[in-house]
Length: 277
Image (tube, rainbow, N blue to C red; front, side):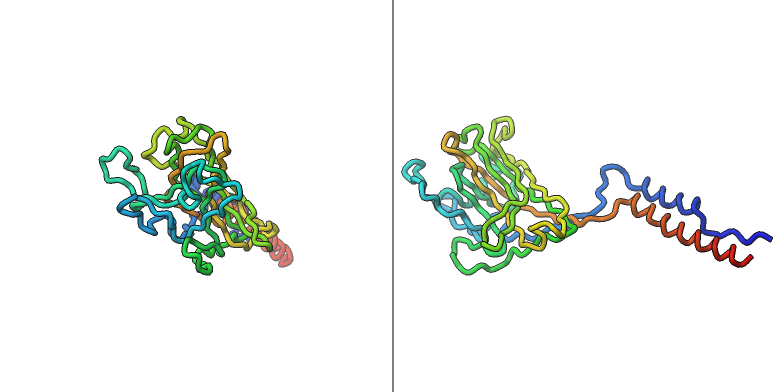
């Protein structure tokens, strides 16, 4: 007499695994990213002055040190004045920014080496010890996307002026080491208006445990890479966002993993049935 057939068989396993694959429609994300908190991400503090509508003191963001060859007489501004925050004008004004987050944004002049950055050990205008408020790290198995709203063209910016957006970490000597970056280049085509922020992104692929930045604190930098030939004007920046996306198995991989386990059960069931004969 033949032994009873196992109730768990390959065909029965394949169907739910295939259904799992087909259930995931193209374009649907397999992993939901989580937002990482960035102190003063929208540049709402310090408040812009009612008199000048700007403020050169920005909480939580550090400015780049003044280069030795900087000449304030050339641009008419001191180094400290090349970065700051400003208040948005009321609705109906010709320079009102339509999609600003909150009431303020930041600006960076398109002069060489002007920058704003933030990491675990950065300091702001108060020159106090680091508060370590931004403590996110590059976790193995996770990818990261930085998104910043940008307007180029203010102050008669020259075509070709550029701004680098970067995610970095600091090495053992405290030096910034770039992990990923995007170069934003001004043209009237790329920025047809000065009243709408355009999102630009920087993406770090899935961090491997062997990467030098694995486990290191994340840094964010916005650096003017203008040259003497195209300096002048300023960039507006707002709503700095950082998304952490954990890696997950693809649905088909997960589904056919079920088949693998099921096949092992099937083989063992048949062996037990044959042994009973």
